[in-house]
Image 1 (cartoon, one colour):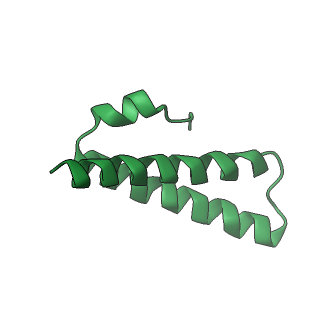
Image 2 (cartoon, rainbow, N blue to C red):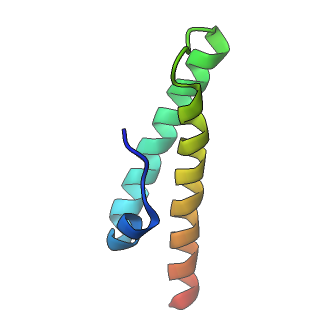
Length: 68
């Protein structure tokens, strides 16, 4: 999965952002489980970007909530 840009995330509506958020959280959970087992090799850097994508989505949702 590619990294999400803030510009593309802003184009999504709230429902799409929520679904993307749950998808990224599920991916992050899988990566954390693999990391705890010791089977995660090349994708350790992806955990960092998944966490940042989650933070970006939360920021956008909060901005939209405050703008209402």
